[in-house]
Image (cartoon, rainbow, N blue to C red; front, side):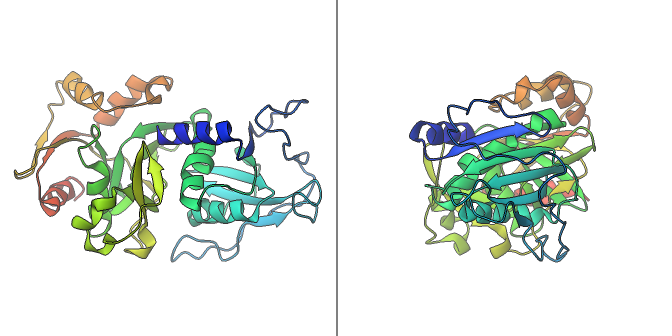
Length: 341
């Protein structure tokens, strides 16, 4: 898991002092060994309240950054810092930091969800900086890992896979490494679909929705062979031991992302280069066969989620298909499109 490896890296090197806690739980009296200087959090109801800004509905960003000074001084000059309040994956996130650079990365990561409701945050992150990694690595290895690792306790189940959206419904693409989930997802997002997620789809069990963080796609450095617009882009992020391109979809096709969608079919991918693509339904009367294909994909710790297998069986009831993907990406996308018409 690239996020887990990244967090271990930052702990080992001591680049960041980070402390996470769920809202309502007090910090320990003694500093955490990985956080020698935890940022103090004001008691509920005290300090400045953050007002939700007006949203620019054309691109999902806020007209004003959802930040506020706490105590009127930057971290390092006093005992307070800056804050960002975000609505991400259907939950409210409060970030407290002493680093404007970290808040800039958070704004690019979470600000596109739009304004947050003015309410008690579900999750609070406290991260002191400055970041020693480039923005792409810090976002993936620290900021996202810190946030996503808290979601299990808030009714969100992580599923390894990509997801594309059309007409408000999503199709979830799942398969072992090398079957081309991210490549197919990017190809869809640059043309006829909207991207919900390239890597992890969040099943919101409370709202009955699928959610994702869709704006950045990570591809191998030779992706320019398939997608001319990426030719010559430098690789900026190390993931699972490989250098990756990070592509901001807003720069490729504005409006090609979605942060939530109604559940749709599950497509289990297999790669068959040099052939045409085939899409075959899996027999709903033989659910164990679909479940076996599902479990061929590496799941990390996702199976630790309470009731995981029962939830997966419910997902497969939306319709399960096997896509044997050939060489022609457009042909494969056309088959997926028939599932969402």
